[in-house]
Length: 450
Image 1 (cartoon, helix red, strand yellow):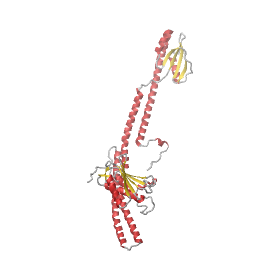
Image 2 (cartoon, rainbow, N blue to C red):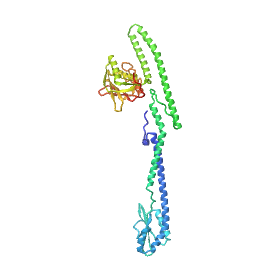
Image 3 (cartoon, rainbow, N blue to C red):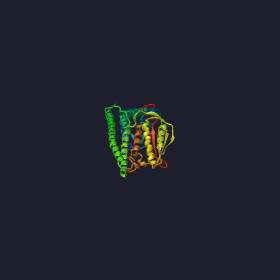
Image 4 (cartoon, rainbow, N blue to C red):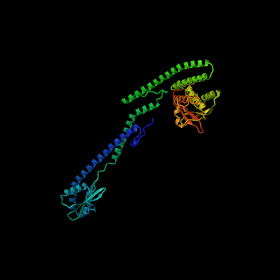
């Protein structure tokens, strides 16, 4: 089932639930930390402003009175000592500037005027806006100009504070990721179990542990898996019973027809009964292929098995050859593997006029059994469809051309019971290559062949 294409802002969202939850939590934590930074700087700004105004109110009157009583030479030595972080005293006129542009500058100027009891004529001007800097000029009693330069600024923060806040954010993000992973792990396990669900294979039930919702979902899935297995077993029993009931009357009809006088109608009826009987047998074979990998696995020489199969076809006069075979010894179920190879060879002989069998070793460690022909091949858009039961490339119902549509389906189903995979591909120059991929590692504990 194809996913609905995402449009607009939905394209920006992560595809997995875990990533989305992590993104939501990270965004929330980021906004919370941003709010913390805003509140921190606001508080520091208010504290710095209050401290500057308080210190300025208490300091200006004392400093100006001290400079009034000192000689010009002594003022030059004392002025640097009176400097503070946000303001200082300069012996000289103020620099050129513009009228005060901020309410804070006007407030500070009014505070200086009150601290000096309005005894001096003040001239205030802004000399810089970024950073903000303004100067207030007055004239001492002996006529020397004195300038108070004010540079408002927020109290500096410690260098380690941003590091601590960043570490907190990383720690909270890791905790959020861990929580999301723990919360979504059961969903991942459930999705994996659904993907692995295969009537032909026995899978252990999902563990019923974790939160109540997870236990409930695991219990429901295990019950569903058991019901599917039960329904498939019932289907097999029903088809087996139908096969038994149909084969008996078909055989009687065939015997009666053979006892009749020879003729064209008699031969056609016998042919129809043969097709009907073969269709019943292949339908039952496909139903049983879902449980085809029964019995213990044994270790066998793949070359020896394929050589035996090819020799049987050659003895029957079929154009089947054994090509290059890499040495491979694996644990598998010989009857099931033999049935798969025979179905692939039958398909190649029927539609390609002959078959060539070979074995390759792949880089991923698997073994590939190739059955190749030089027939018409299969259209690319129908490669997967032909693996479904009763699907035929030809619309004709003639068995000599269309077949029953079960040969490849049975091989595909039986390959799954061996933990293998059937892959079809067209060959260069024409023809079809049917490749059976088999794992070398045993799917279960092997039983030594006697």
